[in-house]
Length: 217
Ligand code: TYD
Image 1 (spheres, rainbow, N blue to C red):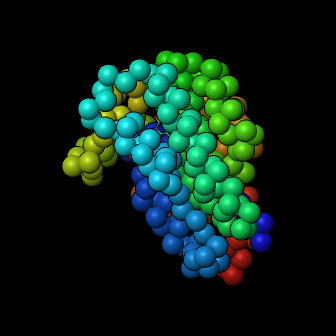
Image 2: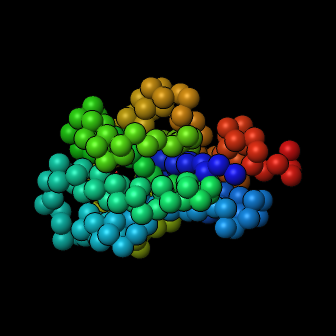
């Protein structure tokens, strides 16, 4: 089987982690554990995990926005080389928790660095590698923030603490990306109950890659 690169995106509190866990186990049951690779940005290998620690350390609240954007892009580059390209070469389905769209939305829009500039800067990092499918979990900012407060108050990171306006700006940028790349990005209403969201994500993956989930459909 040919490798497939699928990214998952969404504002904080969209439920991305829960959805991804479920999608990963469904896929593993369907096509075999060794065919599926879950990985996350920034991270996935020892170099990117070190960059992740610098990015999310509560000590680094004085980090410059451009520094932050460059570090995300550096972590992304290493992640591509260490994880994604070898996974694709081995024919795996790669479920990637965040990719370049996160930088456009969070650094480009959220931090006002400019979506076009962040896009251009990231071209050097990704060197043309875009996912075949991006699943965008859309949630209204108020609900997203409420979910973070309810479920993960013990592990809120530096970036989670941004104000409502930041979350709204991030979401608007995601919606612009969705309209800009309708072929690649599919929007899922993540305000629905988890089961329904998972069902919708499965349908989108199935439509895009009909050879997966073959046994059921
Ligand atoms: P993480 O703890 O992985 O949470 P989540 O489940 O929301 O993905 O934190 C990722 C945070 O990093 C999230 O707030 C979005 C942010 N981020 C950026 O700002 N730019 C990026 O390029 C990426 C990949 C993530």
